[in-house]
Length: 111
Image (spheres, rainbow, N blue to C red):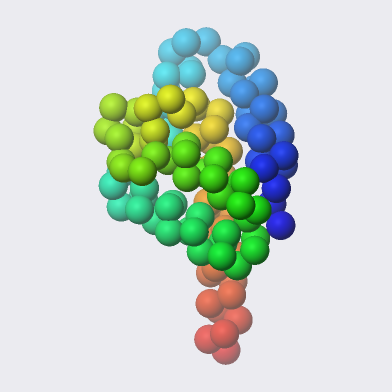
């Protein structure tokens, strides 16, 4: 189970790396983390599904939910108004990993 502590630790590690970037590089990274309406919906759905399965602790699921915000926010690349770049990066990476698990499970059951 992914705990809030592990997720927050990942966010801190990414923030340390991002602190080394200049403003233009940081802005580019932030822009790269933008998600459209469909991605926002999928991220929320994945968060809810993996929380229900016990893969995400309630606290980790809440961190993701708050970072995404209740609604897609175009002004911050689809994320909640106060969501920072490090959090966007960590959650995007986590979503990629969770989707990988889902794809593997689907392949295993298709055989």
